[in-house]
Length: 223
Image (cartoon, rainbow, N blue to C red; front, side, top):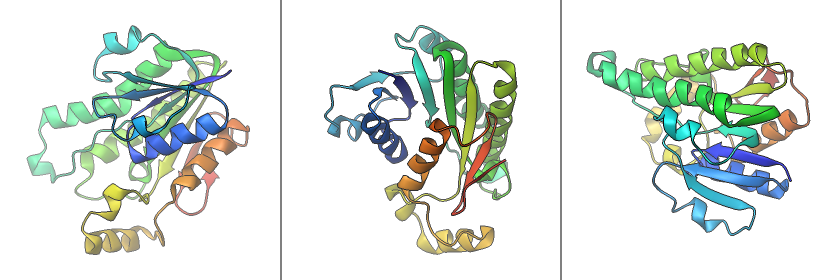
């Protein structure tokens, strides 16, 4: 049985990806930081829930599992105007959003494995004045994806660059702001979770070349 490590598994996106891999008959190692309220609702003998400190290289290096597939969902958000951003804020964003995916790739991936990084179109062209640190981290993650695809030829590495996703967190933010932002970037509807898992299925089926940044904004196209 193939195995997958999924970070950020207790998020709504992470939960959906866990369900997808379970349905694909994978052993799922669901990694969480603290909360397990959502992921514990899944009842399966193929699911293993483990805490993992993504800010610690030692925690990742000594993690008891390796896997055939790694999906890096976990992310840190710090949305604010640049005047309010500290070095500590910026470094924590980079630590979780860029360095941790590098370390999971380095330490936790089996030979001939696949890595899927959950990125954002904010790392390409939809950023705004409130997402400076997040956008910078996702741009770095996109470039890391491409670099790692060259660095280790026995693996395949991809990033899914998402626009606004139809999650409870997004549905509860200021809806006027959301409508404004979606109009500004030309997004007509929120992305459904199944669009993300459909793209993961395409990756597993070999539809895209390693190093592809697969944009999910209503029309999927790797580049």
